[in-house]
Image 1 (spheres, rainbow, N blue to C red):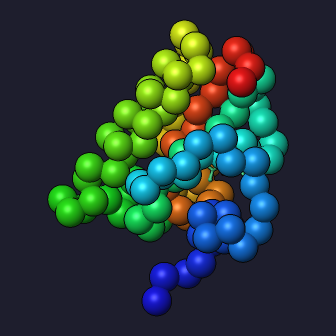
Image 2: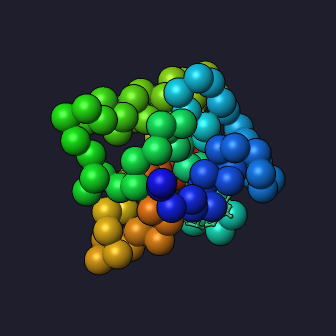
Length: 108
Ligand code: 5GP
């Protein structure tokens, strides 16, 4: 049994979030404490706790999140952004459900 995090509950629509994009593989929503004009979090629907827990079987997930972020940016006309994974407590990770931070000075 996986420990259910706040992002499991956002993924499963048990708690509200400002979802900006969703498909079969990913959910993207606004960070509740934004650190840029646009601060989104991209999570895979398939649970992995952290980059630290990625295995050969799940190694496609970080790249998939990056691709979804790239496509989202193109679709919204965002020309510059930062992508970050926090890895482990020492890397500033607070929520142990793999997520890609997407930050831009441009607003969507
Ligand atoms: P981490 O430090 O784990 O990489 O980032 C977790 C992020 O999740 C933080 O930037 C934090 O503001 C955001 N966050 C934590 N709880 C919630 C929540 O309930 N809703 C949303 N939308 N974001 C959250």
